[in-house]
Image (cartoon, rainbow, N blue to C red; front, side, top):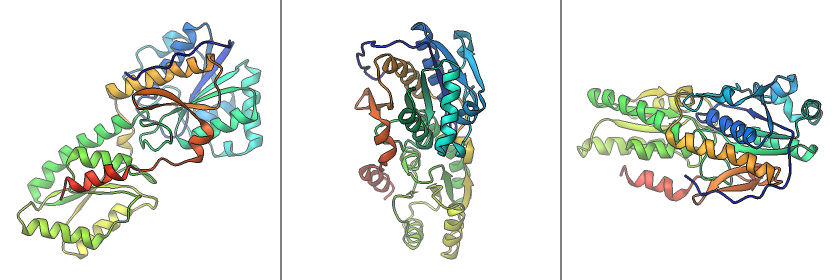
Length: 334
């Protein structure tokens, strides 16, 4: 477990609320449980907001009890449901959300989600007297200020389970498979999956792919007797259809690759033990930070410790893929 900060309680709350927003990720349920149990044990009433910011605007709030979060740590997805709310970009719409919170006597909010969700959290903190804490819930692990995000470990293991099965077919038919994982703007997931799966190549948005070089590498490997089958892990990229375009280009060079899109299978499934511990710790510590007087921060992890990062920095800066990690992925398949 990560080392925890020693925070002194400085303020009281009558009621807090928690929501999950954006794409779901395995571990959101343990995070919700951490928030609810920690708040109740501190004598604070807790509301669960259904369907993220959309549910907040609709006033879909439900009182949470200890029983509400019983037996949910092993469940994928989120019991609070989730949504992407484009309307929340509008300041007037956010004022409606603030009004809902105030009318229900809620003076603090915990938001679990990715960069878009945390941007909304920052806006609420700036535009109201509501104390707001964000938790990084995304399988992409692309949130600035934290080394790990809720759901990332599970998504890696889900992709590995699929690739291990795909490799059996790739070997039997002596073919290469282009396996697409999630990651529009970030190659964290693809790089970790590629290293763990022993992939022959990893293609990510951060680095330009030279398809001629890739085709030549596959051809050279075949001639050198290093194998005529294997796995190429591809992050989905910014434009739909990237993996199919790569497959078509490889066909023009004489290869016969197959494409497998893992898609939303990566979002589902039981959270790993790592994600359950991470999410539980972050959820409980979110309440500790609120009681210590913090607001407009994200609670994340760095160097083996739970830390706080200003939400302004979280949304202002982009977490870059470690070039040394990507180089390791390249090194291991040469």
